[in-house]
Image (cartoon, rainbow, N blue to C red):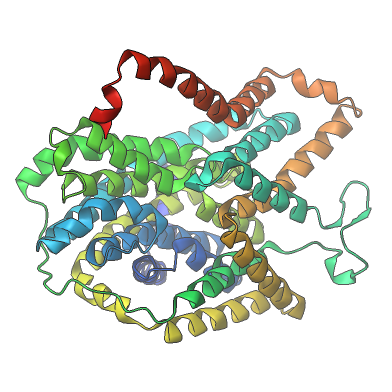
Length: 509
């Protein structure tokens, strides 16, 4: 490791202004994560246009800190009111809320905070070790390898968010199609502009992100009315005991590994990591009968996994320019907005950037432990904020953010139209994350394809000459066809198994 780059990166963060902004981002992240209906993805999208005039490293550090804190914040309402503030906290509510009902809310919140910090710190160690390694490997990539890698990243959309694979791929394809609007860089031909000069430069991703994440959710939440949440009244904070640590130490380690690996995989994200962490915690537990009734391991598993996923997701985002989750797709867009080139050149030309982000995320993990535990009683009160006050404020921020990016009224219209389309798409089962990742990756896919075709003199068969390309193509086919193949094998095996063990289904029930 370059000691000079490490010290330079740390010095970029360890100054009063940077520390203050990271602390503010952590507080906002916990608040946003704790509020049902809001998400860290929405908060990062709203923050994006306000960082235009900031130093790029500080801007990305704030977004990374908000991402980390928002992932933990969802566990507060998951435990207290059985309403996860963020999707990754869904699995935490399975055992967190039963513990709160029997008067152990403080113990549950303490374990959630500690497991989240340990999972996050574990993933940051992997982040700092493997990101430079991946970047050095990626230095040998040519346009055709980047095309194959991006194609593989898009194929992983089939598994994102646990929704319908077909819907995810359709949403991702529409995102790629949206990225082609404007004048083609290679041919100079207008595409999908419909005669509007404002579309010649393409559709900017900032208002689209704000509309997809903020406005669509605003419209969705407006149907719920001013719902009043039932809150746990008795809340005595309690850090995990030595016995709790003894029971959960292997669960935290296992879930940290799972969360980091899942986070590194493009498009998987922290929700998948949390669910897998919970399932594996139950699988290896000696007290399986306690799960669903208030098992402390049922909190440690998903919380360590979902926060480990945040550090893991930053690895492909910075090293390869391929986002590991929906939120890191927005962070990747922020890198591009600030004129930075995500990928191996970012790591080799400005290594201090990597260590600055690492320092910011490390501090965010420590700070949200202090903020989350110290202010848990205050955060439990925000569940009582009426939607009639909350969502108009979100709408105002969305309007200001979309307009301030380029001071162009068309961006406000793009934001509103994207929000309406996102609302109806959400009702039909199309999630926002696949579309956003398709939108961000679409430009890289087209660029690498065009460059390769120029190098190959339009001979597309040369895409299959590189072993690295063939490797990624095989992974793409496995990603797309694997679920169908495994489902078919499962159906074929279920018949003989039922005939051989007719009592098995009764035992499983």
